[in-house]
Length: 131
Image 1: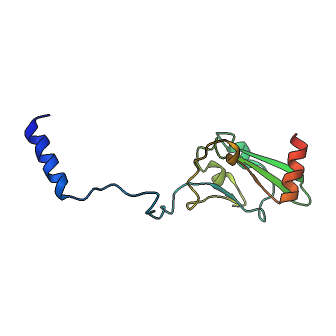
Image 2: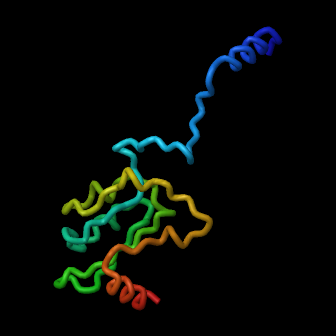
């Protein structure tokens, strides 16, 4: 790089404000179509398992406890998820969605990424069956 061009860049940087954002301290709203964490609506779910079958990353597992009583547990592995929204497209009942507000998913270990959707009693029963 020639010194004249470099000095010009340095001199203009003294008079212009930086364009960087102060991210953790000043947050901008996320776009509406951002694909974040998976959300599950248990009231409309029938436990068909199409979301688990069509997931290319195998990040969803539907555990059926009692189909007649509509007792299902959805095991979601967020660290495997590619956020492609194929599960949302495959769900006939519309009980899955990707949240645009819950997108900061960093963690130091893998435990927060294994998420169980369902009632607390059903989740405990499903964990006993798998162990």
